[in-house]
Length: 172
Image (tube, rainbow, N blue to C red; front, top):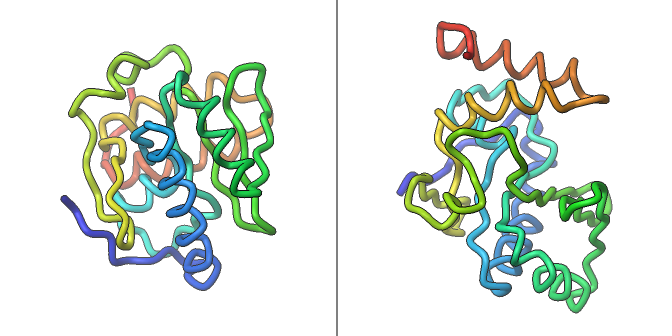
């Protein structure tokens, strides 16, 4: 298990985000789910680029755990805002933000079924054990996210180029 000890450029903000994200991770676990970290935090961990900012924590949950997780969030007086017709949503506390998403479609290696398999990395997220996508998964996610996106294309393209520079090759 990899222990995370580094911080992104926005260290002071991120230090405030950590306990909030840990609380959301524990609520997801209490709902029976094993959340999986992906997105910019995974990108940051793999590139170790301390000039990156990480403004939120993105989690993938199996769809079947969303109703119970949402119920537990509400019980803990934590606001959950659904933003897609399916289950994906944002959990906010002031400026702190955690996104939870279902798997979605178009991925070759990440599926609802694969979430329960041992294909993800275990990390120590500043004292909380959680799963995180692999670098290969990250390489797969960005092109799909870019293709799907309507508002964030420029931001996702920037992340793709950053990851390609780190890898020393183009993403497939």
